[in-house]
Image (cartoon, rainbow, N blue to C red; front, top):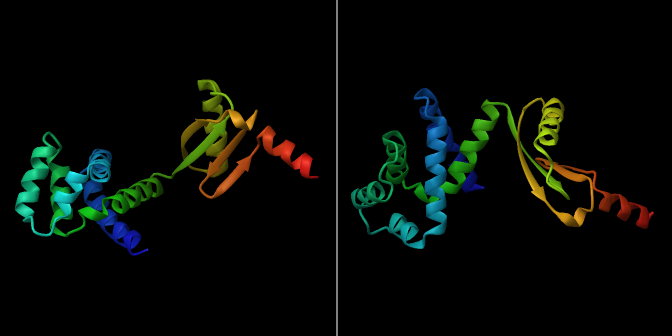
Length: 174
C-alpha cells in the first residue's frame, strides 16, 4: 500500500513534467526499460540500491549503462535516484500508466480465444468494446486451446466468459 502511494505521488509529479514537455510516451518507454533492467539484472539493482555507493557514482553508472537515452528521461531518473526512489520504479511505472490511461480515456482489455482471431475480427471486437466502455481499447489477445471455442474477455475486474467450456460446465452442474 505504501509502495502504491509512493508510486502514485512520484508518477503524478513525473507525468505532469513530461506532459508539459510533450515527452509522455518517450518517458514511459524509457522508464519501462529501466524498470525491466532493475527487475532482471541483479548487479544493476544492487549497485543502484547500495547505500555506500555515492549518488554521483550511481549517476555516472546510469549514464554509461543507459547511454543514448533521452536527456529528459535521464534527468527524471537522476531525480528519482536523488530522492532515493529508483527502488520504487515498478510502482512508479504502474501508476504512470494508470495516469496516462485515465487522461486519455483508455482501458486494457484481455481477450482469450481458442484460435487466433483475424485482424477484421479484432477490429470489430475493439469497436464493440469501445462502445461498451466508452474508452479507447488496448486489446491483448491470448490463445488457450483448452477453452474449446468462444472467448473470455477481462475488463479490469469484470470477466465476460462466453467460452463453450464454461457453458458445458454449467450444463453438467445443472
